[in-house]
Image 1 (tube, each protein chain N blue to C red):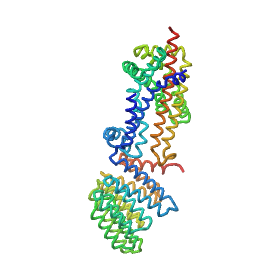
Image 2 (cartoon, each protein chain N blue to C red):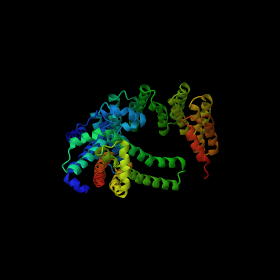
Image 3 (cartoon, rainbow over the protein chains, first blue to last red):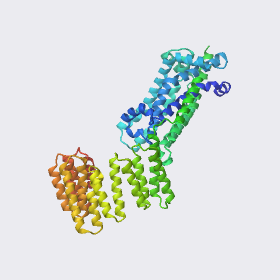
Image 4 (spheres, rainbow over the protein chains, first blue to last red):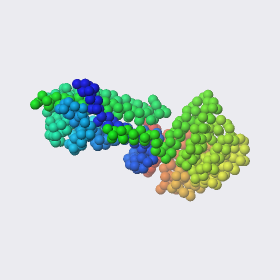
Length: 273
Length: 279
């Protein structure tokens, strides 16, 4: 259904496209961070936190993935959530009016719901961070580096990724609830839980299947960039290429996850009437 | 939609305008050229064109970024590339450019001048080599390269079989290194001078003399880094040259007991562990 809607209203991709362009801009700025004039802004904190060598070629590429991760968080916190909200508004408009969705109007609609939207994203992000990093840190702190500990670490990291997907499935309907039903932060989350509970398996599939592509992309990027010296000894810039590919993958997966769940939300809403 | 186009325009324009003061591009070129240099050194069938390509790469750096901090190093590579090809007059000329164009970069100037002296020596012109070595000491007295000069001269006489000159040169070198240590025991130069002084003894296999001298250093400079360094070197002589690991342990243990927090504490502990490791 999502694909059909997308084929009929390709403008639904605009918010995700804008998000990707913004992330591309962030990546471009970060690519240039060791150079003037960006070095004047990024130089002092990078020197203080990571060391002066990361301000020089080719070591800047070792730090780039980490900086881009922080940049992505900031980009999602600012423009990203607005775009997600905008997409929710556009899906709702298609369902209620059956007309081609307006871009400007839906940006305004999303901007007005910025605080609860960002709240939901932050809660999901923090829970995911704890799930992904907490158990691994505990294992490393309290266990000896045995084979069992290594296996446990692998299990915990893969289990963590799955848990993060399930968390996203639980919170995903909060976005349409906040934009379409004008629910507040807590009401939106409560509404999301209740819908997720009733269609949990479907939601989990709608979230997990596209997100697997994200995971594959991240694994390939990590492998390519950590093995830079072996695979691409003369091309440290491969890191930028990989990060750009990741932006493209996120564009696809975000569109699929948010649009399909928004469609399901609207259908659920219609059946509730 | 306009916003999206604006973002896109900025994202495209930024790389095209290539906002850079030059330093980053210089670093990039230098990194690639240095890698190619290392690769060329590994190559067994390198042709003169291969050297020329690399000379051109480094030359571009010196021309495009003359004020960049590492331009002098790029020029040094050029000199080395000619020296490797045995084009010694050209190599000398290229090292001379460093002295002329980068006079404030004293460390690399000292190294360049020293290398010019080595080239003269290779050309069997010891008189000119000696003159140049003296100039290194005179013009750059505080550089590490200048510290190397007395030992280098002594080694030259030894290699040429001039025993009397060699003895005199070694004696003079040792005196010089001893003076440096005595005059400024708290400096990094003093630590370097210990190595050179011991190298003078080592060249003539005078291990007992070396150990005696190091013992005086340990005694006279117990409150500086000279003492743990002297203990460490004594341990190394016992361990590697005299094959007496038990005796070496005594010295490493002294570092562990008295100077564990110094820079020699950790390596001494590692050597203690190595010696005590069951074979």
